[in-house]
Amino acid sequence: MKNILFGLIPALMWGIQPIIMTKLSGKSEEKVVGMGLGIFLVALFISIFKRPNNLSSTLILISFVDGLALSYGLINQIRGFSLVGISKGTPISTGTQLIGATLVGVLYFKEWSSTFQHILGIIAIILIIIGVSMTTFEEKKEENIKKSNLKKGIITLILSSVGFVLYTVILKVANINIWDALIPQGLGVLVGSYLLSKRNYKEKLFTKNSIKHIITGAIFAIANITLMISNEINGLSVGFTLTQMNVVIATIGGLVILKEKKTKKELIYVLLGLLLVVIGGVFIGITKS
Image (cartoon, rainbow, N blue to C red):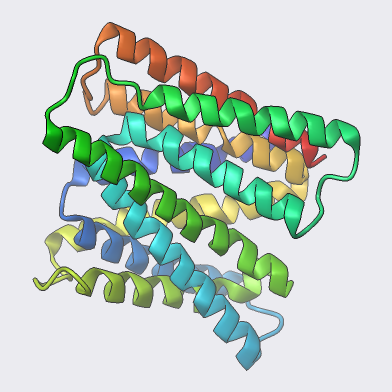
């Protein structure tokens, strides 16, 4: 029971992170730079207790690139959330990440070998696609600007999922231990966040707002590290499945805490879509066992 409760820590952290991030306010660029700094500082702190066993120039370079991929995922996710909201954006982000990671696992790592895994996995992907589609439902006809925001938000969140999938895959392909990668990866996130933000944002990046978002970066880093430990004590299938509960926390938090407005019909669609995404995530977890 203790192991399962520990495995829920990443879900809790990733669930509350976008809510806290929204509450702290600030521009998207300020948020991602603050998060990058928070992730890097946590990596430095952890390295005091968990020193890397194997450092080489190749490991440092690959881990740094992995951090760049994470920064690309983060900045696009933050921008996507600002366009469509947390309650609508979280299922889209989680669902597309699940699909992307699953496809890479199947096509590259050959994770599905049995007929049962293929059938259950395909059902899971279909459920996730339907669920994500349901969360984007809007009852009232929106103005062109709002319609444009929805379309742009969905595309931006899909791009963020590309970054997140690459971030989870790169170290696995290179067979690099997360503990060895922690510091160069954190540096990659910080550098990538700054460079990506500076492309379109010419104002000062290190502001009071960005400093506040060190908190959200620390929350993200804690979720990532506890997930690694959970995978070790619970196994990959259980650890992976438990993290999918973050979409429930974030979506309901967006509706209840952030007061994101929905009509009764839209709310039903969001909650049903959320349920399908979670069920799909659980099914994918079962295919990994």
